[in-house]
Image (cartoon, rainbow, N blue to C red; front, side, top):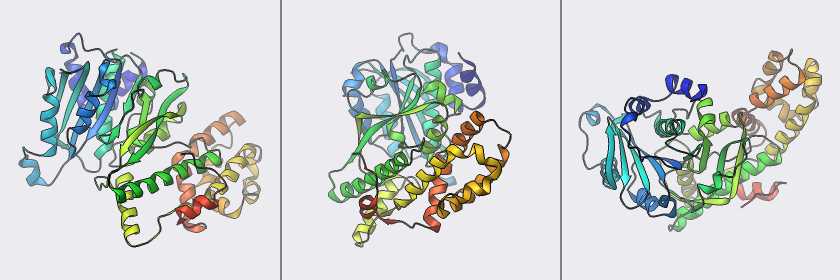
Length: 413
């Protein structure tokens, strides 16, 4: 086991891993799988488990780690557990899928009767999750357990696949990962939202278009952080995951922050030819993200208002700024002059994110080190802050369709 794994397990992993490590000698000898999939589940039915077990993916040795979670409620709810809750029903269903082979504390390993799949079921609803840690902690628990199983060769492939209960995975989902370059540390699958409800479907399509417009804008600007940050379409290498210290424990945005760290460790690859179909749903279980955005779009459309998004000129300002970075090291001691040659909006946005302080701190670096630190510093988060500064001070949002029409870049379907 590498030093990276050992350090992470001892310092940063969740308590469920202690249970697994303590009782790993009792794991069944035949519990060895090729691939692992992590799915957090809150207020979900058993449909996603049934769908997965009926798919071709479950016809080869695979482990689905299901983290059934619920936020901690008020003190009354803590004392009285509702036995017929969605979480309880899902837990009972998962355990009924086959033989319970291993069970300690809140972890249960099930050998599925109908196929060669296994379920590792995590109960984080009896002892709930802090509301502000939400889905981030649920994903982290599942990924921590998966990482350890990879490190002891119970899972053969190095990839941890991250998905959600609303995802329909294609037949070549796992196999698509096996041929990736060694430099790739995280993959993003293609995706498509769908719904039988026309209003929800149209709202989701608009939001999906906005996501693709944003990434296309970053690609146009030649940003090294031009990738989708959607938790249900990710796969990442276990060793890179521990180097990044795992998912942040947040109620939303956990996928964004993990990818931001992983992108500094290696390549992020978009697997365009493999599409994960996502059920378009309205949801307020998280403070921001797809569900709340779709709800907002539906309300706007009901009031005959446009859904507005980033002005395309923002990405042009970003493009000019990133291009100018190539000359920054040579002119770092004359920073004011370098800034003045930028367009005024870009100059203002850089100053608003404390760009001058970064350059001052790197004043003694050689060119290679300086440029490397610049890419690390001006990461996905700083890029977003740069974009928001431009939006708030120079280029307010405009109707999405207008933004797309005016953009000098193409959005890929």
